Amino acid sequence: MRFSTTEVSDIVQKISALRRSVSLRFRHFRTRFLEPLRRVGYVGEIINFIAAAACIISIVIYQGFHHAPSGELALLRIIHGCQLIFATNIIYNLLLLFTDTKKSNQPIKWTMDMLVLITMLPLIYPRPLSPWIPLLDKILYSQYFLIGVLTVYSLLEISYGLIKVVGRRTNPSLLLSASFLFFIIMGSLLLMLPRCTVTEGMNYIDALFVSTSAVCITGLTTVDVAQMFTPFGILILSVLLQIGALGVMTFTSFFALFFSGNTSIYSQLMVKDMIYSKSANALLPTLLYIFTFTVTIEIIGAIGIYMSLPENFPMTDITDRLIFSGFLSLSAFCNAGFSWIEGGLGAPSLMTSNQSIYIVTAILVFAGGIGFPTLVNFKDILKSYVNRLVGHLTGRKAVHRPVHIYDINTKIVLATSGILVAMTIALFLILEWDNTLQGMTIWEKIAQAFFNSSVPRSSGFSSVNPAQFMPVTLTLMMMLMWIGGASQSTAGGIKVNTFAVMLLNMRSVVLGKKHETAYNRTIASGSVRRANAVIGISVLSLSVYVIVMLWLEPELPVKSVVFETLSALFTVGSSLGITAELGTASKIVICTAMFLGRVGIISLLSVIGNDMKNDSQIYPYDNIIIS
Image (cartoon, rainbow, N blue to C red):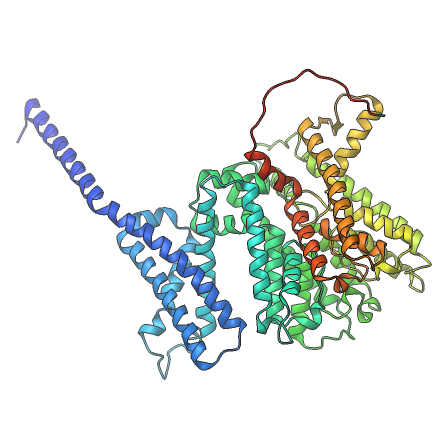
């Protein structure tokens, strides 16, 4: 049967009309039914967020307190209620909003959703008397499995909710300050839990001090960590250290992007600037690289520390040794300065060892203080070399090496840090050879010089009591504490980048140059201005804090007070032994110093400055006499 051209045209028009009709009906259906379902889904997200917060609080209370059977049962009911809310929300999204869920979810988010649904099986199907797979039965019906899955899922939901708040164009400096303050307060409450401490708990001021020191990765403490905290308390302290070191935004962004993959463009751009990612498209790989690098180095460091422990180490239990090694590795990489052993790293069993533990710790401190921008640049350099090698081996067209593969920040950080470490090792050996290093072998002196010249720049560890140093050595240590590590790292201080720019500025002024140059690059005037501002504010703030502390603690030695204040403000953690003797008011002042040192005074001032009217008028230039 053959159709004429006119008939074919009519058929095509009818099909097109039918398609338009179906499309309109589908749009009508979508508008009428799908949009209300989405609105219900949004409400479900809010309820899920509230349930996640309630679940975390309930799990913390359940794990942190000793309960009567009735109280334990009530907490378990709340946890199971949150579990039911999670499962209901997951099932709703899978059945009614599958297309949207498929677009937004990442593979690991799918995995967590499935695990939450699996945790519902024990509630639906009673535990069999003769299970087919005993190991699987033991896992599924284990309370640890339930709490572990719900904890991770709750953290995921909270992180995703927080990153959505960032998408509302919140002031980055204000958000950063508020997030650190939030975790400081939460940490202080968690450290007061009965199961966190060996004794019946600690007073709030000491808990606030330790929490501030942990989140601000300082290391000062008013209590003996080894004598005060249980393994559960050390776990809480470790989480606070890791959050403080990597930054709250890095944590929440990683969870939101890696697990859900759905955040606003604004929040991605803001986090991109925080972690020095080259582009928003490279944000998730950069975050994943930072986390992978951090965890890998901390695990390798923990293994190295565990293997370096001497036979006469006071902790004989393998579990305690593993906890000590992991905590020290994390604390060293985070430049925090906490240690879970009486006497710290100056314990006699460590001082009489082969010194390898000090070498490993110093390397971890240097790796943590080198800065995330440098780590990201290392990744790009390694990727470039690997691509060239693969191209050479496979015979493909050669991949040319970029002209400026080494970032100027990387060059300045490595050069300045290397010079500082080399000079400090030599000076420490010369100054302390017959003082604190007296009686040691040549190898022990070199190892101790390497360790004690690396840790003052931020970590706060000490194998020798700084109070025993010669005055000139103590002055050298204080200068290193002021300089600190690299920018956007776990270290404190004004940063080696700032110190290097200051030296370059001084050189250009002395030589009469109009611009500051380094490695065939001209330093931006904005960077020079910011460096000068950081240095000026650091000196002024240190002076103010020293005056306040001397006023509050007139009976303490001036040298000790100045050292303590400088250590707090530049988040170092070293002390001459007066931290526990401080009064309540002085402890609060030191807490504010640690907070300002971690967040950055300029960042806080920018919160105020952004709200002020910007005067764009340009006035005539004039000179001020500078002699």
